[in-house]
Length: 90
Image (cartoon, rainbow, N blue to C red; front, side):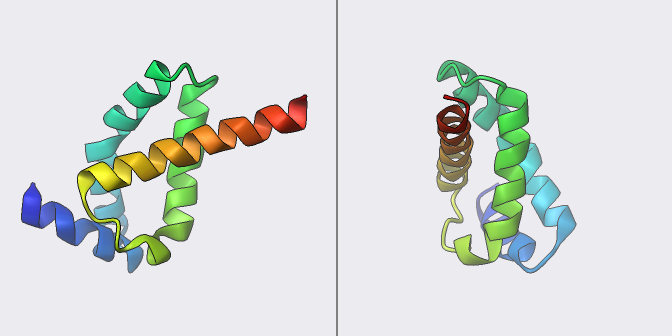
C-alpha cells in the first residue's frame, strides 16, 4: 500500500475518481470506527459529509498524503460538522 497509497492523494486531487474511490475504500471503515468510538450522532451521514468536504478541498490537501493524516482530517471534518450542527440546533 505504501508507494501506491502516496500516489492516490495527488491523483484524486487532479480529479481521478478511481483514486478517490481507492482512498475511500481504504479509509471509510477506519473513519467510521472513530466516529462510532467518539459517539458522533448520525455517524453514517457525517462520514458521507466528511468525504464530500474532502473531495471539494482535496486540491489544497495534497500535502496530507499518509493514510493516518487522511483519516485524521476526515474524522476532524466529521466531528466539526457535528459540532456545527449542534450549535445551529441549540
